[in-house]
Length: 175
Image 1 (cartoon, rainbow, N blue to C red):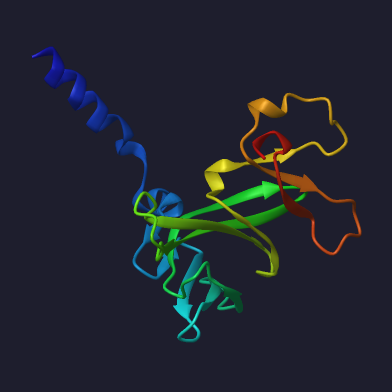
Image 2 (cartoon, rainbow, N blue to C red; image 1 turned 180 degrees about the vertical axis):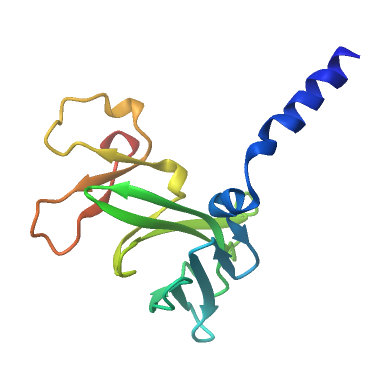
């Protein structure tokens, strides 16, 4: 009986959150898109080879920007993870996409790339091989940190006035 009471407390406790508040944090994924309350991202093939497009749309203002990229051996790309984050002085959108693995190594089933865009105008910043869960912000002015404790992909902040606010770099210890 104690277990049922504990479960009831867990189920009832978050009831003070309104549907609007819950919708604010909800991210919906389907085969070729990902969306939040304020953002929609659509992925689509551009040609029959390896090009694909990422179209970002602000759902509140209608502003849209489209970028085209070369896929990792495939144009059949789908969203894997998406996160809105503050990095190097700007709000950014990190989108990890998944490509099907189409080679003779059966132990691999997917290839993941992460793309970064400015949240304010959807400008492309950079991309890297791997998921956004493998990314950490690096203090570029402090090289004496424990690099072995950091994930394989680092965000190196660039000086003010640079064309982009940061770039992805490989953790030197993961080479």
